[in-house]
Structures are given as C-alpha cells and as structure tokens.
Image (cartoon, rainbow, N blue to C red; front, side, top):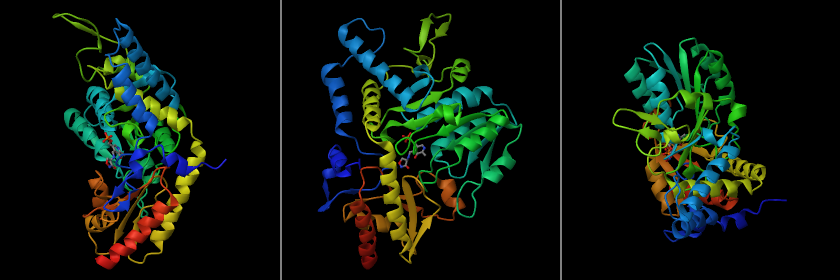
Length: 404
Ligand SMILES: Cc1ncc(COP(=O)(O)O)c(CN[C@@H]2CONC2=O)c1O
C-alpha cells in the first residue's frame, strides 16, 4: 500500500501556512521538524487533564502523570531497541545528553594523554563538550579527517585508533552534509581498542530506525524536536553497566535516595541523572511522536524521502552554477551557488515561501576543512515533503538567479 503523503501532511498543521504570499515549502527539517496533531494533543491533554508533578505520587493526578511519563520512557526504549527503559535518560536534547556523558564519563574517567576520537563532520554539540573534558583532564582530541569527497575517512580512523583511544564520539548522520557515517564499523574498531562509544543520533532518529544493541554503542543521544516531538526534550541511551558507574552530573531533588547535612545517597539510573522536575509534557509528547512514527510504514517513508533526495540531487546537478557538497544520503543537502552568498540565496527563496538554512550549521571545523567560510545553503527533508516541494525549490533557485 503506497503511503498517502498528502494525507499525512494534513496531520501537520504548520505545513498549511502561506508565507510571503506563497504556500510554505518547509525544507529546514534538520533544524527542527514540524509536529503532528497527536503530539500537539498529547501536550494539551497533559496540561489540561492530568497536570501534576511526577513520582512520589500521593494523589490520582500525580499517579496518572507518572504512569504517562514512565510509559513514554518505555516507548522510547522500544523505539531504539534498548534492553531496558532504565537505560533511557530524559534530557533537554542532544546537547545536554552529550554534556552529561562528557561530564560523568569524560571528566571522571579520562586521564592525561588519553585520546578522545571525533570526526571533522561533527556538530559543535559533539565537539565543545569533549574539548572541555580534555582541558579538564589532560586528555587530547584526535579528529578523523575527510576523504576528497568530504566523507569520513575510515582508513584514517583505523590508523588513529590505538590503546590510547579511550572514547569515540561520532555523529550518525551529518546535519550539514546529510552523510551517513559508518558508525557500526567505527564502534567495532573503537571497542576493540577498549574505548567507550557515544553516537550523536540527532539527525538519524527522524529518518530511519535506530537499534542501539545492533550498533553496540555505549551511549546514543538525540533530540525530540528532530523527530516530530517538542523542543526541550531529548534522550540519552546509556548502557546500564556505564550508568551504574557514572557519578550524577546535576544534583538536587528526584535524583537522591537520602539527604542529610552529613551525606547524600543517590537514586538508581535513570533517576540518578534526572535532577529536578522534568519536562513531563515534553516526554509524554515524545512518546506520542514515537507512537505516530511506529504507526507509519517507515520503510515506505524512507523510500519516499530517498526519492525526493534523488530528485533534488538530479535537479541541482543540472545547474551549472550549483555545487553539491559531499555525498548526501539522509535528510540534508548542502550546496553553494558560484559567487553568491548563501544568505542572499536563502533570502530570495524565503520571499517565495521556501524555508532553508544557511551558514556553518554549527559545524565550523567542517566548513573550515571544506574551505567554505560563508558556509552553505542547506535544504533538509522529512517524510512529509513532496515532489512539489522539491520542484518549488529548484524553480525558486532559478528565479533567485534571475534576481541576483
Ligand atoms: C548532528 C547534531 N547534533 C547535535 C545537535 C544539537 O541538538 P539540540 O540543539 O537539540 O541539542 C544538532 C542540532 N541541529 C542543528 C540545530 O539547527 N540546525 C541544525 O542542524 C545536530 O544536528
């Protein structure tokens, strides 16, 4: 049965807008995705019907809120095939998830001379926390270079991995170039050297199924707002053996067992890592986003997205003044138009109702490596985009060219 994309689009109210006198063509999904009505309803239902704080329930509303909150955790565990919901920690997003590991693993277990292995493709959220951990511990960063086609150089990665490699932090999908990294192979190589492995999955979970057990990573981080859920809620999956060893990174209420002025004992994971009142509505709505995705034929949606990607790549390739950067395979396509500042092109596209992103995409080291000081124009897809959206973008570029 073909997936009816036009019917799915009706689930996303924001897509029906008119922008600058034109129907919205939303191609900035790598920045944040739109939210389906069931996710919006879940937010509203919590605040309208079951609003209460969670855990330590002493009344009916709090019991309902706690059950919904913990059911959402169970849903996320199943969504990424984690062995247990106890390995699912709610965070504000990918950035906070990575900071948690950089603090509770990096700063507590790294020693002078230890090596943290990153890649040139990383988002700042998967660079700066490790830089801070290295500065605090005397560990050093090692960076996997790019090939001539701007892809991660797996051979170079193998040569960089040694007994000094104590932590690998790698993006699953590049937010800037839409490249899918060989994370399973990198994890295998790093684990063989005895390293801890973290995957930044921000740009993966909204596009294809993720299986943390198949990947065999120790940590997997992602944001709800990249997978059709609200902002301010994200997930850190952590292998239970590591969560048991890690000290808490924020302290206060919820994350304790006992407190006295003499000493404090901490709660068990995941609660040890969830200090204070959590984003209850966000977590429940993330659970609703998981339900929504799992009710779809995700293989069909992936085929649809890939068809759109090929349509876009073919159209851009046919333009003599457009250069596609890298080899995009999921979500995002970055390109430059000869001699035109990316923002100038994006502004002319916005005037036609077409939303794209420009600049360094929080990947300054990547732009430096690619000698793109002005960054790129990035169009990024989701399953609710259509062939008409791609055609509108390509026509919009042609029209912008006439105005430049
Ligand atoms: C690969 C990757 N890692 C980490 C993050 C940080 O996520 P949070 O902001 O949710 O913590 C992002 C955000 N993507 C940025 C946000 O806007 N445009 C982007 O490409 C990302 O794409």
